[in-house]
Image 1: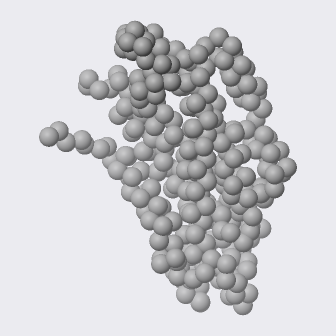
Image 2 (image 1 turned 30 degrees about the vertical axis):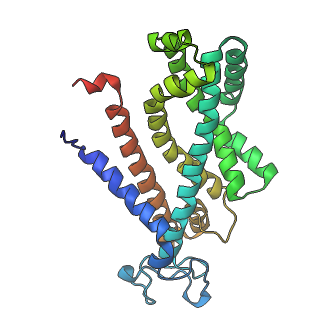
Length: 278
C-alpha cells in the first residue's frame, strides 16, 4: 500500500480546521459561559493572564460578555455560512457550467453573458445591496454569498466540459445510445470533480472572509448571535483601551482562512494531473 505523505503546510491546515470544527460542534460543552450573558460590572475586563481580575481567559467585551465563549460559538456561524454558501454556489455554478459547456450555442451565450454582467459589479457592492433589501439573517447571507460566487464554478466547469464533450469516451457513449443527461452525469461530471473540489476548498475561505466583512459592516448575522466580524466591529471603539475585544475574533478569522487556504493549496497540487507523474 502506498503511503501518502502530506506536507507540513497541509497538516497545519488540517489541524487548524479540525480544531475549529470541533469548537463548532462541541461549543455547548466547551464554552465556559453563555455567549449572550451580560455582566456589566465585569465589562472590559482584561484576560486573566494580562491582569484580569474576574478570571476570563480572553477577557470580556463592552457588555461584560465572555469573549472566549463568543469566539467559540462564532465558529458555528462562520462554518455554517462558509460551507452552506459554497454548497449552494457550487450547485448553481456547476449546473450552469455543465449546461453552457455541453449544450453550447444559445445556452452558452446566455449563461456566459450573465456571468460577465455579474462580474462587472463588485461583489461587496452587490452583496450589500441584496442584504439591505432582504434584511440580515443567516439564510439571506448564505443566498447572497452563493449569488456572488457561482461564476467561479461555472467558468471552470464550462472550460473543462468544452474539451470533455469531444472526448472518445463521450463519443462512444453517444454511439451506444446514451442520452445527454446520462452522459453528463456518468461521464463528464466525474471528470470535473477534481477541479470542483479545489475551487470549493479555496472558496470556503473567501466565504468566511466575506461573511466577516458583511458582519463588520452590520449587514451580517443579526445580534445577539455571536459573529466574528461583528465582534471585531464592536471592538473597534475600544481598540486603544481594550485591545483584546477585537483581537481574538480577528485572530479566529485569520486562522480559519489560513487553514482553509493551506488545505486548498495542497488539494490543488495533489489533484493537478501534471503533478501525478512526479
